Length: 171
Image (cartoon, rainbow, N blue to C red; front, side):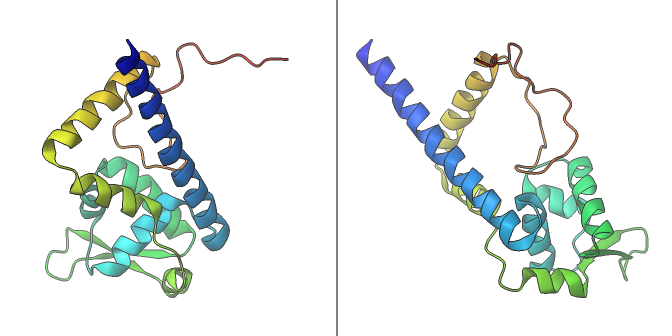
């Protein structure tokens, strides 16, 4: 009984640290750059590799192509990203930074999502599996529907994901 309580307290403490750090980092990114954490991550990926497509970015972000496409559309409209045709395969759309995108990245901090993805990749397979199982169990216990492909700290349309019994405001 005591061990179960201790593991639950440790889990909550760990979640507090992760959520707090990511929230703080995401706010700092937005204040410093004017773009979201997810947008900064995608911009940095485009800057680091020539000729990336939306599908390439989705693979790097461990998310769905449709989600990345929405965010890239915002970056194109903001004047940070340009879409063009691949010179070797005209059917393939590739992304590049505009001068405005390059200016934005000068002095920009590392996107917090990059650190999270890197940390997850460094986990031993059994630890990654235990984490995935635990997080999915928590999602179910909260009455949430899993949301595949949502980029962290990006306001993209959500399919479901509201608490089934949202907390009530207390007077």
